Image 1 (tube, rainbow, N blue to C red):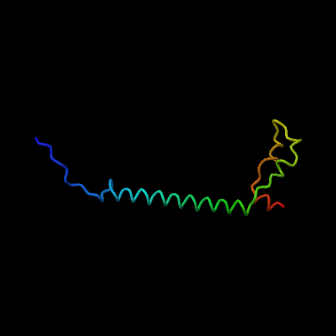
Image 2 (tube, rainbow, N blue to C red):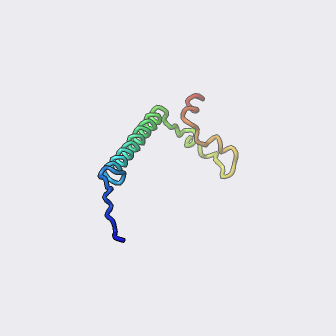
Length: 84
C-alpha cells in the first residue's frame, strides 16, 4: 500500500493559530486574575495592619512548653482592633 499524504490540514486547527491564541488568552486571563487578587490582598493588608506588640511586647515570660504561650500568639488584625 502506498502512503497517502494527509491533505486534511488546517492553519486554524487547535494545533495552529487558534491553539496559540487560546493559550495566549488563557495565560493573560490567569495573569489578570492573579494581579487583581494580589492588589485586593495588598489593599486589605493596608487597611488592617499587623500589630506585633502582643508578641514582641513581653517575651520574658514565654516558656518553652507552656499553655500560657497562647496569649503571645498571633492575633488577627480585625480581632485585635475590635478588642481595643
